[in-house]
Image 1: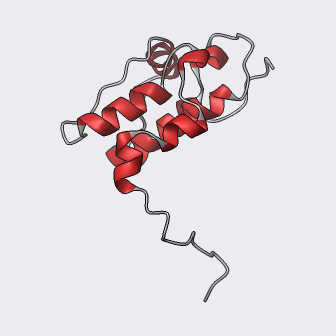
Image 2 (image 1 turned 90 degrees about the vertical axis):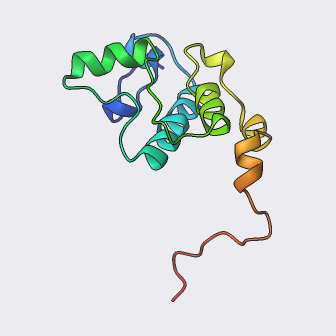
Length: 114
């Protein structure tokens, strides 16, 4: 694909640079979401669109001091510039930070439950 769609903060470098892209852009977006959930702000937030594009293209990520080494490692492996270097879904599940916080015994939430 080559169309540009999505929210600016979540676009992968290959989209920002107008290159062909595949499903690996979703892994990138997962990394952005992880960062934002834990930091409370987007990972590549900048004052202008141009600066946000530049930060994405350079993978200019600045971790808050409270991020553990394990979560920084996970996010860095999701936010790799080269799509082929990003973790697969299976590899994500094996990451130390995920294994530390994942509990298979807890059932998934049921949004329809009262």
